[in-house]
Image (cartoon, rainbow, N blue to C red):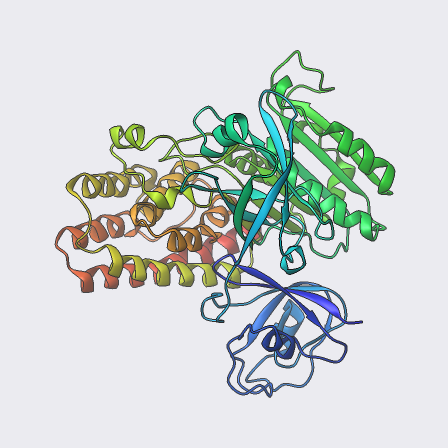
Length: 524
């Protein structure tokens, strides 16, 4: 019979392999030509240590030097020894490239096009090799816009076992995909895409579920509901769907159908503008009831634009609710590039340039940012190390390549963080996190390398900071100066100095997160 195991890599690629009865995860991965890093394959070295996000397993035999009992209790395993006892999802501390695998490419046919309202269109693709497309409910693909070089990221709205794959798009006046779907798309068109990507996917339910959708963020939650219908869960599932205006209200018939198909499923919807047909006016947090969060024993899946994701996180914090798990997907571009908050389509290059920034082809790739919000130090440190590796790589790539305009913008972004740090304390946490994120991402944004940009955007660092930092949080005093020092090193084309600052910055950032997480836990 066997079980399905999802292997999520650090660069956002997820591969699903079928593991036979009494077969180790590593053996099954190797059969699928996925080379998970390993040395001994005997449970003695720890090279293949990974984290089990969901599911159960027999850990097999190992020694303490490879895996301690404490690590096992936290959810770590050795892929060379672990044998699944259920479907599983695993975080592998390596890139897909290092495992000699990659996201697959697919050619499909556009088979259906539905205009739900003036603001929302859904479309259906039938891949030529559907049997090779294995994805998890909640994941997304990068779709090439026919007739252009642009790519856009969209989440599946259908379940993994459905033959056809559907997607939902909010129409943007200047969006490349919007223009295609609105003006040129015809049933029978050939559409290419790659994937699947993303760590936002359904884990095995072990407690009540709360699904929160903003606008077309409903799409991946529909995929999750479809999966839940295949083997109905015993736990309550509640969905809250938030929109802005009347034209954004779509998919109610789908939700009513799931209400019939899925026991224990309830839902509600709300619009922020008054006068719509929605039963409530306001924001999603206003219709979350105490029973929905189950005193914190709940798994929350949250998909929407960044302001919604951030607002929900802050609301949970203000209410003293610490959910067992909070998974999120934000589908808007970064604030420095502007653009439409629903589609993720960037604004025209000339508009960005006029504001002192530069837009490259890399901005056209992924507008989806996925992750998991929690307060494990191990996760925070791992992501900081991953960022350091990526920043050292981008330094090698971009040193000596910035134009005068780009260098001036790089310095402006470094200077922007200064105002929100008061000595060794965070002044305005929200503004500090925002400006810090813009600075760290800038070189990736202008690099023209979509793979590096996408890898960077898979990191949870700034989401963890936003959930952890408060006014007065202790921070290392050189944080803002480090940003300026990196810019100075680029101006002097001093590669060694830039590397030194980046590595020291990472070490100190770990200290800050260590202290901040301890303070957060102590105050809970």
